[in-house]
Image 1 (tube, rainbow over the protein chains, first blue to last red):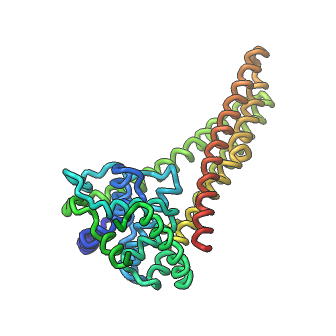
Image 2 (image 1 turned 135 degrees about the horizontal axis):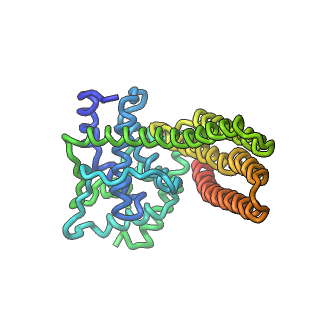
Image 3 (image 1 turned 90 degrees about the horizontal axis):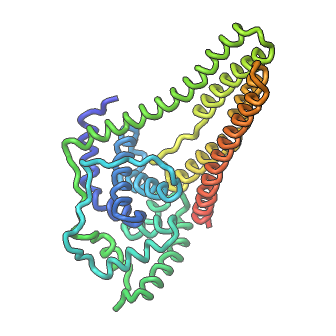
Length: 167
Length: 193
């Protein structure tokens, strides 16, 4: 079924507004650059597939985080999943010279060392979402989010201290 | 180290890294991808059913054209095996759990785990719905044909060899899925505790 121009416009609009967010999250779950590109394309494809059935029951942000995290986590557990294959129309342009801050690298490394599902929680926390929305995205209670985040933040801070983040 | 500092650092992204996409073509390409995925699945399903249909048609003809009782029994069993395989494939497809990417992360993991468990069940039972129903009648037909004993034995051994290979191959795939199920179990349990 051919989608309408309205959906096409909405789709591009959603991607344009959230591309940085998608890139950040995929970066934490990707094993390498190619994997990151593949995950981003997979997220884009699943947003396209899911958009016509989006009924507005949850906020657009919740919906988008769910799709992005589900695609990324799925890539960790389902080994023989079908890949989107190269889409020339989506690409990640790497920096000519790496200008990443050292602190940024350390934060990324420490998040990447956390268990997969803990990563989802800390990512949503760092995205500045309230506990209620995190609970809604992950599918656990708000209290549970609070308890888990307390523990995950502690491990993250420990890792950052060890890597000399506060230098 | 304040949480606010971490949050702002996290949101910085790599300033030089850019995600670019073609605004004009992207939705069209995505639609093509979706349609290709759907067509690939339809084609695969059709291929599997067609293969079973070929068996049914060929051995139904054999069933009514041969006077050899052994070949008749083997052909009848193969027709039934073809029907059994189609029923099994259609039933498995119809009972496949839906996996929603719009579901919560925990729900999505549970859906994926159920999907993988179904796949594993299908692979684990391949001996009973695929290998034995095809190989036993083939062995009966071979044995009933008026070939030299050594040729018959060689063919039966070949059939057994293929069966063993198909079984082991499926078992290996089942074991790989089992590893994924265990990892998913751990992830789901990790969310609950």
